[in-house]
Amino acid sequence: MIILKYSEVEHTLTDEKIKTDLLPQKFGTRGKIWTIVLVILCLVGAFAYVRQLQKGLIVTSMRDYASWGIYISNFVFFVAISLVGSLITAVLRLSGVHWSTPLTRIAEIIAVAGITFASLIIIVDMGRPERFYHLFIYGRLQSPIIWDVTVITTYFVISILLLYIPLLPDMKIMMDASKGKGMYKLYKFLGSFWKGTPMQHRLSNKAVNILAIAIVPVAFSIHTVTSWLFATTYRPGWDSTNFGAYFIAGAFLAGSGAVAVAMYVFRKYYKLEKYITDEHFDKMGKIIVMLALLYLYFNINEFLTPVFKMKKSEAAFLNGLFIGEFAPLFWSAIIGGMLVPMFMLLFRKGRKPFPMFIAGIMIVVGAWFKRYLIVTPTLLHPFLPMHNVPEEYKHYFPSFDEWAIAIGSLAGALLVVTLFARFFPIIPIQETIEEKHEKEHDHQ
Image 1 (spheres, helix red, strand yellow):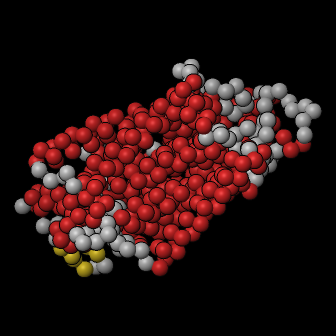
Image 2: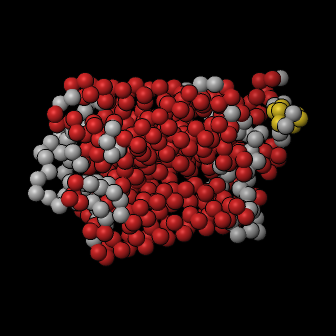
Image 3: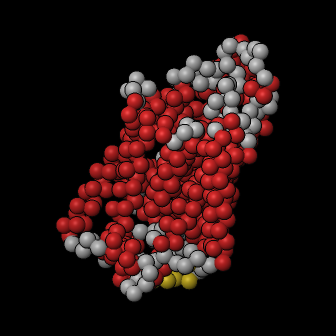
């Protein structure tokens, strides 16, 4: 029998207890307020997008030089956050790491929400939505943009399947628990064909293993191809062969920080202390430290060589980052988004739930700053100096419409995660029960 310590009292987890604990719960007052706030932010973003459709991209602060702004920063951020699904669901699953089971669905819904809004924000950045359709009709294989569209679409489909297939056994449990209630029809529509037969379990496990193997190269391709969109453009700050590995390392760190935040929130407000334990935070903290060290290496590699050479074309760009107008954001991203969380998590006390939550927030905020810094400073420091252009072309700060759409997209991703947690179990029920039985058998 598996016995876990909780509040210094030993509790035995029965199958029925697990089902009761992990079934979706109705929102309390705070949950309803949180959802309403997210919906309002999404509506404000939708209003700003309608304005942009009516008046054109002139409502933004993007001009001839800063032609990519906060939209592309958000795109790169969402793509980065989405990589965590392949890290936890695929890499740890294929490595035979069982302690990550309570975290797999959290990671997958973050991945799905991230890749969904990465796709939407690209359409927003295009100005006219029909241009996205033109990519498929008139796209050329010589363009890295087509490669990006292809791998993002593939990654989205695999992520949806990795979220849906392991959810099927839980659908049957939810159907039994919701008979006569409003959600029964939805659960029946999604999973009525699941009977739980040995053959279905074998097919499901085989499919998940195949998808877990497939998603790793696809996920790496997304971040490599996204980095190529920058690195194949001949500009100061982007002209680097380091970008592929640099983007992947940063994405792993950002996604892991997001999972740490989600772990704390779901554990606290859904009373999941028996399932998302201090041990999970401790192990995730160690993974984050390793990823932070890896990303720190790539940051040093990214800036040390151009600083040492200090070519004239890159001098203004680097000065702007280190001591100029972008210095506050740059040092906040490096120190607050990487170094401080890393040092916090080196110590066991720092890997407790609340410190991990704080470190996760710092990592996610720092990751967004870093994506903004990848995009904007480079565009404002072209190889050919700016001559005879309006003063506003030499600077970029997002307009109200850009902020509204960007914040609305972030709220939208959070809303997807929130609504999923309301209607589906955020921790796999059947898989948790099966692992309990395996541990009981091992202890006999």
